[in-house]
Amino acid sequence: MRLIDKIKKIVYRNKRTLLIVTVVSFVSAFIAFSFILVPAIRQFSLLSMQIKQKKRDMAKVQIPADNYKLSELNDKMEKAKNDLEAARDRLFWEKDISRFLNELTLLAAGLQIEFVSLKPETYIPLKEKVTVAKEAQEYLFTQVPISVILKGSYNDLLQFLKRIEDLNKFIKIDALRIESDRSDISRHNIKMMLSVFSQEKS
Amino acid sequence: MPKVNLLPPELRRTRRSVLPQLRIQGSPLSLIFLGLSFLAVGIFLDAVGLYQKKEFKRLNTQYNQQYRHLEDLAKKKDALEQKLNRITLELNLLSGYLERDLVWSDKLNQLRNLFFKEVWLTELYFEKKGAKAKETEEGNLYLKGGLAPQRKSSPIGTLSRFITQLKEDKAFFSDFDNLTLTDFKTDRRNNTEITNFTIRMSFKKKVNPPDEKVKK
Image (cartoon, rainbow over all chains, first blue to last red; front, top):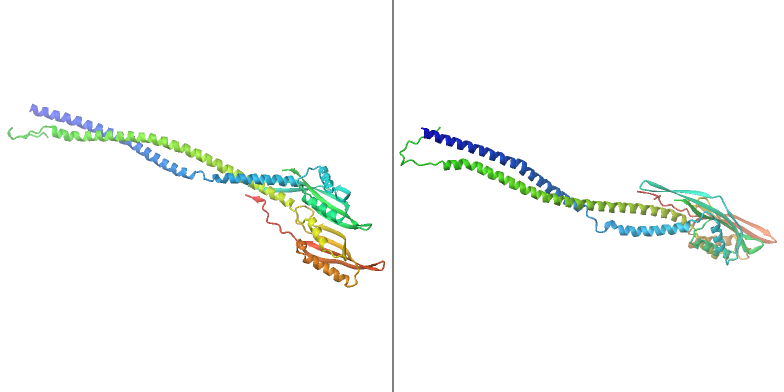
């Protein structure tokens, strides 16, 4: 009877130990699963997803082979700048018209043209507005009209006009009047209204 | 309840507690093994995670760099396009001023070639309606002249021929759209009949292109 009790005791002790070991193992396994494996899997899948997404995004931010045609745009820009510079150079004179008057007399050189009078008229202010991307820029010009009276033959006048029109600086012919000179039919009285432009500011 | 074996000892099947013990111990062992495997897999995944984090960081840096580069390029492109637009508009503006509506040296040269010997010019002038340079050139060219007396044809016939010649010369008349004889009178001077005339020619109205100054 004592033996049986002893055995019982041993079995009971073993079972308890086993139960404790089992519980501890289960708890350990649960902890390992919940606090190590699951977060690791979660992190792994999240990172995998993020990497995939990033790779997809990378494809979207590929720099185009033509670099947005920047070099082409730059070339266009260079050309436009040069054209603009040339246009400005051709159109605008200094506000002081002495250079214009000097140029005019040079244009008449070698022609039988006699200047009777050169008279600057009232300046005409001109305002232009250019708007790009809602940003407006104003251009202020001044038109400087000059009334010119001269005498010369029809041929010389034609040559003089041609020189004016071919000049690298722009002179606008606003009005022209040719009258025969009754005292000398080979010569005409010519009245012209010429205009030049100057830029106030840009 | 404890089991009691009542069989004689030779018939008793000795059942050592090894088997039941093993059976009982199997579950904690497998649990330990399972826990260890969880741990191992977790550690492995963490290690992979570290690599992934590195890879992600690398990709992210590359992405940011590329994005910034692309953004810079796009900004540069936008700025260039905007600048180009502005320059083009300014150029168009200046070109409008620089444009000659009429090349007077050519026009007067053409006119000279259209005169007959019986017709002479006493006055030529043109008037523009628009005072401002950019306004559409609207105006008239006036030709005042005289006709020498002729035996074979009447002054009105000569003038009519002259007018027809002016109108039919495409190069000359291309800039005009109307020709009117505004004055025609005959005077007698020193027993000579002189006919004076005035012709008005209207400049063609220029059709301005739609305003393109506002660009986005």
